[in-house]
Image (cartoon, rainbow, N blue to C red; front, side, top):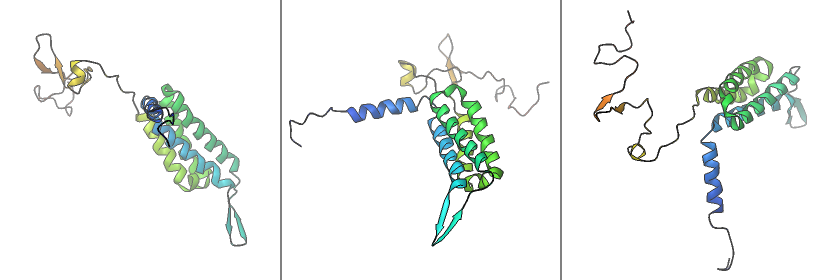
Length: 180
């Protein structure tokens, strides 16, 4: 390469950072796991294994059911990427389809697809969008000033414990006692 080669400086870095920002706003890894779970479930019932001159067909009577389960898991994975607001539905549906794939599709794609779909569905259900960071003093302190912070500034400026649950060591209730 010569010094006159015109390359766009930072093009790859800029695209990588854009992808990273996009990935951080949705359950990306959950969608990837759900999609990875769908592929073995829909592939193995149609696979043919060659052992020397012997062809072993893995086709079962539930081939159509396996194909439907696999395609639905791939669609749910894509939905998790592009429609993050349906994450709970897609996660529960992924878990249910993974469980149904055990008896229908060669033990859920020989357990590989089952585990990927199950873990991805659980990740989708448990994912929560992060709060956007605020600029200023709260961002510098490492907290975003959300209402759930342990210390909250009161109007007089004193830091007090902001425990809205009513269970704290100060009042003797630690969550194990009934209210009554």
